[in-house]
Structures are given as C-alpha cells and as structure tokens.
Image 1 (cartoon, rainbow, N blue to C red):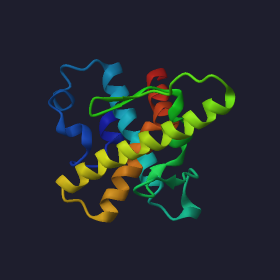
Image 2 (spheres, rainbow, N blue to C red):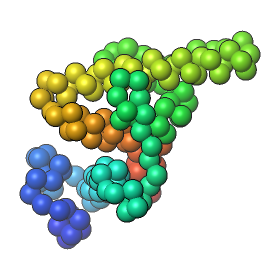
Image 3 (cartoon, rainbow, N blue to C red):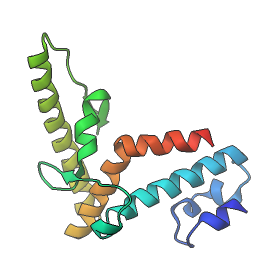
Amino acid sequence: RMWTAILPGPGFFLQSFDDFRSRQNLSKEQLRFAVLVQHFASQDTMDFRRPPEKRMHDDVFEGILTSSVNAQLVTDAHRAEWAIEGDGFVVPKAQNDEERKQLIVDFGASLVTALEEFLLAFCKRRQLSEKGSDYLIQAVTTQMSQCGLANLDRCSRV
C-alpha cells in the first residue's frame, strides 16, 4: 500500500479529503499524483527549516514587506501570468531591451508586494506567529516557483 508507506501520520494533509480517505473516487494515477505532490511539497517545505549544512537545496529568501519570499519566484515571475485576489499581473510589452528590464523589475516588485500583503493578511486572520508567518510565506512562494512547478512535472510523469 503506497499511501501508508509515504504518509507520515494522521494529521497528513491529504487525509483531510473525503475522496482520498475513501479511495473510491480516485484512480490509481490520481491517487499516486496526489501523494507525490504532497510528498515533494513537504520535502521542499521542510528543507528550509533545516540547518544550512543539512539542506538539500540552496533556497534564498527575500522580499519587500518580509524577507520570506523565495528568490527563485522573484527571478522567474515575469515568465508567467499571475492573479492575486482577482488582480492580474502580467509584464506589459516593451519597446526595447532597456524598457523591458525596467518593466520586469517593476513587475516583480508589484507582484511580490501584492503576494506578501495577501499572505500576511491571511496570517493575521489565522493569528500565526511571526515565525509561523515566515514559514508559510516561504512554503507558498517556494511552491509557486520553478521548484513547485518541477514537482508537478515530476508527479505527472510517474
């Protein structure tokens, strides 16, 4: 039984969903995908809580309102379209390379600010501590970065 070998305990994220617990509405492929996504996201999230010498990745975190946004997200954000609470974020067309560079910098700053405001408001509503808020922002932005997309790609090929 694959899911009992991978799942760490009763508080595990997937176990809160009826479809997962009943295993009746999920195909084997869907179940495997869900378990793998949870596993890889968990591994990434736990990695930045380890001492630097024990980490599997060299994630760096920065931000505008916090210092908890994954730098890889900031670097790559201009390559995608984003929406936060209904507001769209897309890099506008530029007339030349110099203008494009500035548009990318401005885009990154506005996206990161909006994302941090959204996540900080969530943390405040949930009464998370400052450290808890940092961990949440690190986890969310890591999964929004190429790392998180790579997890989806890896899971879909299995």
